[in-house]
Picture 1: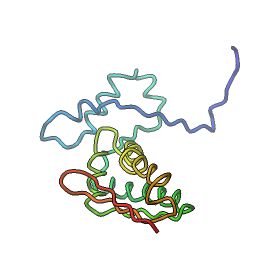
Picture 2 (picture 1 turned 30 degrees about the vertical axis):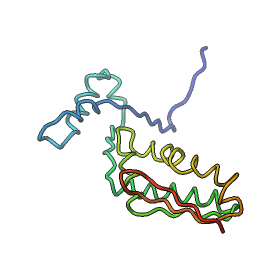
Picture 3 (picture 1 turned 135 degrees about the vertical axis):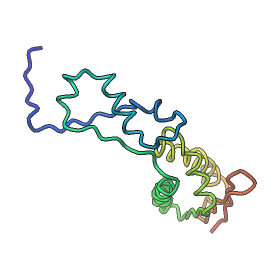
Length: 154
């Protein structure tokens, strides 16, 4: 179109999954930065790489970090339900299980979807037609390999 753009004051952030396949290969070398550097060099031309200020590799989230994210997402759910006088509490075992379910190649991205599927969808009927119509308490636990939800009306 002939439009000229000025990129002098632009911070451009690009993401990629380059090197993730190589990083998942079994081996004794835990330093995956060498593998991701190689993948970047093989994929992008040297002219393009020379224009990059930095390549930053993000590490896989630990179980503890995922559990903290689960806690943050649960706080959001509690804020959403506060107007309906509903409080959701989750046992430590249930948080570990939700974090474990999310501990995939997608990491924290799956946590909100898992909470939607495992908690929010199951609470919707209770809120509309069941024990939580007038508010109440919800306890999410984990036993015998499954999450459990116990609803008590206010």
